[in-house]
Length: 392
Image (tube, rainbow, N blue to C red; front, side):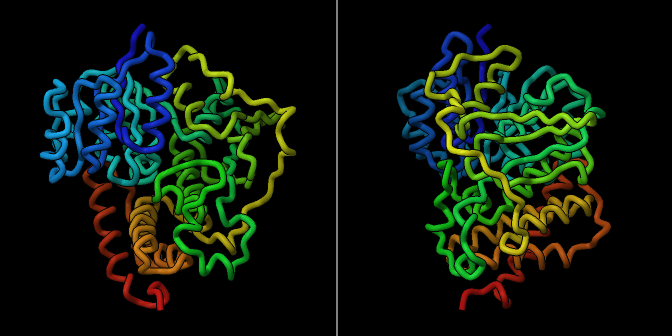
């Protein structure tokens, strides 16, 4: 059966991994629609390379450049919010949701239509509106498959076991580029150092989140909604080799591990295969005899306070995860622009969360989630010029 794929976030690292898997399996997969943020030239190249029939950019201002780049190719295109939603509405079997940040929430929600598979790499969709997204998927009969390597590993390990059989789930973290750095060294870390992830080539936002370990906190929140667990059933272990991506501890004391090379094409292949495994090149298989010893350690919440903030937000529930995510996106952007030092990311997020109403309700739909996101971003920007966030 030939399945058609809509690729949201087509020019990013996960988009590249997805395209690689599709190219390896031309008898089973084809890309019909590609969507990206603002890079018209990059999206045009992807559209031509994949043979897509439609390409859309979220940035309306980049529409003319995209149209010019695709002139004479026969590939239709559009730009702006409505163009993205139109792209999502086009017929497809699988939607890969890999738009970074809260910007991917509306498109992910729109992708949930009857009988469709959504391969979810946009963790912010569940962080910002997890209950609403999962309820919508259940109501319409859509299927969500996790494309993040950790959640995908847990999903595969769980198999047909009921959630009631689980005692706990463990997500592993590489520890990022600052795993062995002292707090003093981290305090003066430059953006280029924070962007140097030891195992993956990723976009700027997720690379900074990995360096602060906020990314692992967001993944804990995502896992809570994805698997229907209680916050106390989730934990993090730092595993620098990144060969074990997740562990499931069952009620009887047995532990099963999801293992693979640190290659996003492994998780992408599982999601795109849906109910039938795809073949992978030999280079993508793990040979344990050739690996270094596997090590695990507890995360240090003193050096990486962002993870602690995410754990607290998960425990608080309600609107707090969405507020945490919005504040973090503003803080990461400020750090990359040189407006704050690295510790200012967690400090700003903490201040925004502390100023929020503790009993604010979780969003019931996309509109409510976006309203919470907008308010938290405004609060974060208002705090940016105040100590201790500003770089002196």
